[in-house]
Length: 273
Image 1 (cartoon, rainbow, N blue to C red):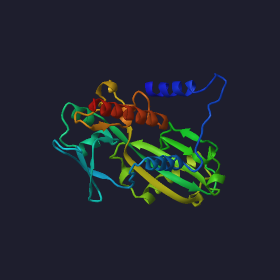
Image 2: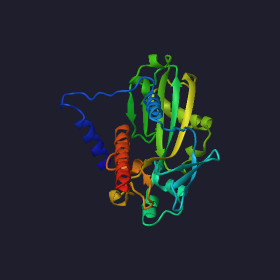
Image 3: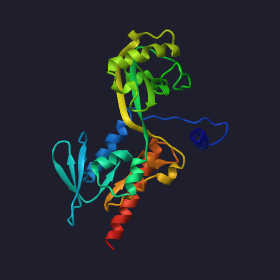
Image 4: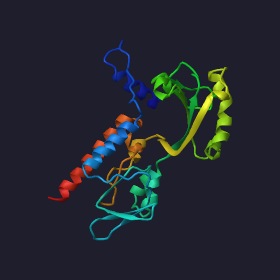
């Protein structure tokens, strides 16, 4: 209830007056338009941006510069002076298994729920609602968001786009289901939203699964948050769990990025004094 109250409070504070309506916005062409431009701007400043490359191991260099070597999934290593990790807290220990305590304990105390989202491309509208929060046990979703009720289907070749998502523990049966099995599972529940719904409405669909989608906020959560500065000099952590007491969102991700950049810049400046 505290989380829910805070969401309502933040929403109302974003409005200029009690009678004003909050305005929702969306970038035509998706957030990739912004992401691609940010990557381009970074490259213009000499940044080496690599996508689709995972990091398997972080090796610390003893008494040498640079301090770290990043070993990636392509089998190569990259030497760097410092690292800002945006991994979920427990996954940080896969990169640095010898992380000192008690910082290690703050990482392992973080608990996350996963998420499964089914994106449906439909021939026609499912409902007239943009964002449907669900509290009905007959519907196995946290929410159903019909994106094209905000940004019209004319921007998507006439298709109607529906996101049906659920937060869940990672041992939930949905996690191991195939895409087709999951669609079979949820299809009957979509008729509770619109009794006329038929499988033939679906032209395409996609399934997305994330094991650490939402930090679980427990009692005294703020007392167990890991600091951005880890005990290892030059290694920093910036992830969704540290946005607390706010909830994850684009605004807070940008703020977190600014915060960690300021911390790193301060440390670099102080090391040169």
